[in-house]
Image (cartoon, rainbow, N blue to C red; front, side):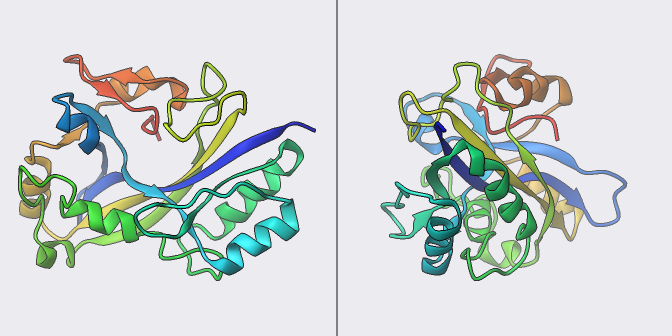
Length: 224
């Protein structure tokens, strides 16, 4: 049985003002691309981080191997190789613990909370202050599988040549306490609301897309 590379991420896809009838999808600039003068929108958040118990369980239960360590945090991300026959079982596990405290995973919203502040965009200052971020509720919405990449591998810099990647996204919503705070976040030069027709250009995450005015949309954003 051939191997696949599994990648699980916790992403904030939606923003919603308390009392409003609907939420909207949004993206945030890729900070590394922005440093190069390129505006490219991606989902806010990052890869799920495993506890030692989680890594051991995945090794024992599914034969997972080649775990990838985050160079900044020192923790292992939920990125690893498994036989394709175990893919459904692995995804079922991560769907079951989505939005919950689990012995297998570190705080699933840590990256989301950190990125709302704009910590990765030193030149523009904060998107929201720590006190403002503390008023936002981050709520789990659902899990979705990214459509397999057109080339079978995907655009992630961590992809492995010759090994197909399969990505599960646990999607969260930002519950804003006031319209004023929502406006402040959305007026940031690095944040943008995305229309359904724009998100459709990534074809379920199988490729990069484009906004109406020609900016790139990463493949970790699609209609949800």
